[in-house]
Image 1 (cartoon, rainbow, N blue to C red):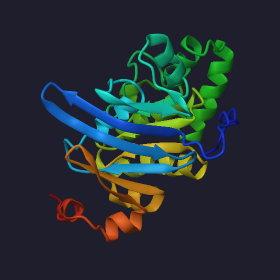
Image 2 (cartoon, one colour):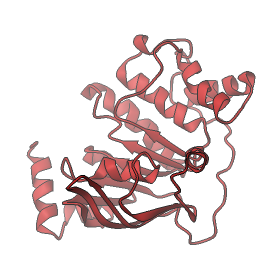
Image 3 (cartoon, one colour):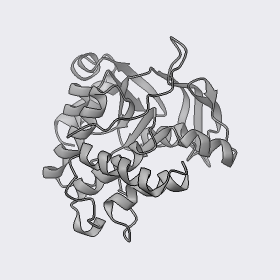
Image 4 (cartoon, rainbow, N blue to C red):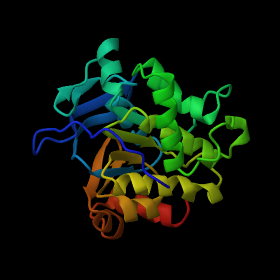
Length: 260
């Protein structure tokens, strides 16, 4: 897989985190999903969120890019506080890519057209420039021979790689992944994780929600265990996954190991 030339990520002041979350709380009615989360993600860091279903992992990702509005607290990206006005959200999302469990591709557009669309509609790139960049990005994720294929003709793993290429097309400085392999057949998981490993190797700042413990162990700079609305434990993968301190973390990891 080749890497196209990409605009350099805008620089940030030394020591300033790419993402800074302070006192983040989120409730849906009487249900408290996040309760006072404090979390910084540094430039170039791969932070992997793990935890039981319902722990708030996906909600936290959606709060980072404004798809959900915090009940309390704040999110800053490169020192700029997240605002919920449409224009401000659109500006922020030009620099934050998100890949979902479902691929969310337009079925009536080919792979290359899916990757071109936001470039033209949001970044106002010409069709020729958008096509050139889309072609390079599809090659980067190993789909140079699928540019004119429609989603229905692609496997789930191929569709997810198109979705990653589409997110990269906006030259993001932050990538959010919400269980990107959970909808895939087991034999297709590896091809998506390989693209994510290559992004990490290239220095992309990433926040990843996943149950793939091997990926967390091999690629994460930091593993963060969420449960009961808060951060239960965080640290290097070998610390959290091999030597957890809290009973809650130990119980969760035992469940994962047993396949429960």
